[in-house]
Image 1 (cartoon, rainbow, N blue to C red):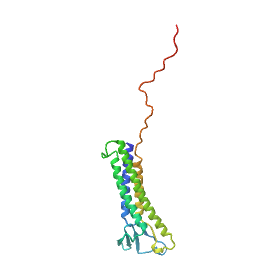
Image 2 (cartoon, helix red, strand yellow):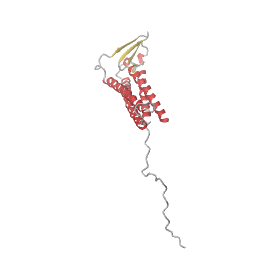
Image 3 (cartoon, helix red, strand yellow):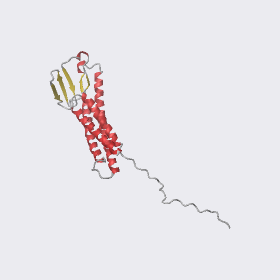
Image 4 (cartoon, helix red, strand yellow):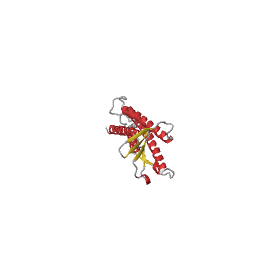
Length: 213
């Protein structure tokens, strides 16, 4: 029963994590303009994401523009895109495999040990997908930090972390946590003794002492 509870908890954590990955990938607030120096008071806030860049004016108007060409993008942004997409696809596949191996589902056969192994494989796949997303977010964050502290970067073009990267980070961590719980739910085989017990108790050896009259 406890094993089924761990599987259910891991499944729902991974599901919430995948939703967070999708939402974080779509949102354009991966980095936002930093308000430092002479850029503290400004009428326009700039946002940049994986797919578009947006400008939010003080009047409440939001204008977004999708990137025209993939080849014109920075190589780090292309790699972040690819890793996030791979992470989402792998995580969805792992969630489907884990669903087949969970004890509360009827698909995947009736063998409990086999279903537990399938759930473990699904958890490992979820771990791989979550790690891909963590690498993508960390790489993007490293580039933002490096550009922020670069003295040759103009003040009005410096960016800091946006909301979307934290959502993607949180989704990736939930994905990894759920995958780890599913991977750890596989029961171990019971060790069989090499020396089976005898059906009857051993009879004591016949006494060698003879009775003399």
